[in-house]
Length: 291
Image (cartoon, rainbow, N blue to C red; front, side):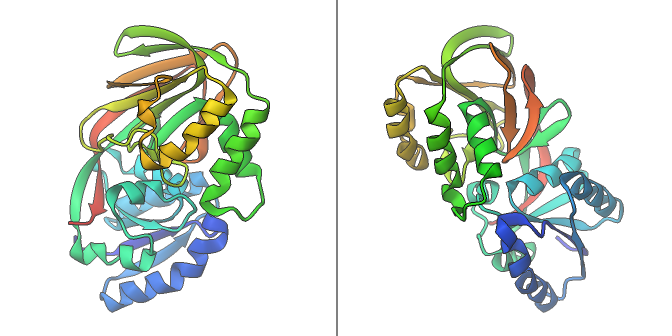
């Protein structure tokens, strides 16, 4: 994996964590003798523009920040257009968690010398690509609350969001079409999983693979608030699928909608209004991974 590096950095990621750790990454790159340049972002759209420019310059694209910026950059590298190096600098860092990339970005960048190039799937909704999980329903409220809070909660911000969202939650009626098969249910949420991890280590689809050309769709049917709350800790362990209110189905394309408006979130950011269609982009992304 030779070549110069374009280091795209979100200076606000992780409440400034990415910016604090940037000097260590720069020092590691110098120690490796690797040519590089630093490109701070001002927005997700700016990150996408920087990624396109780096591809045109035949640079390795290193995304340093949270899952949002990593997903935004990855979308510009689809169809093997460029090589992505993930440098965790956010709160959740769930894509790095799935790939086994070190959470210290100065260690993660050394994978350019010691790691391997791997092909993984992307998911796409309306032209917007994502790496982790796109979900709507109570998850819409949870993500909105997590993004709006200024409390220094770290990865617990999503647990805080869930507690707040449950107070006023009421079930929704859902309709899904999975590879042409229709189904309905009443309940909490629909989640379309690529990596299967979100919310700072919540393994919603613990067996989801990044290289199988399939999406894992998880639905949560209606149950009491207390039942839902008791199930949250099990999601971090990946043992929640024993709950009969949960259903997991695999497909290559899914369209879903509800009986009231919801914003779908992916990689921590709003990406679509319902109804929405998600399809898998098999082996579309080249990424630097551990051996």
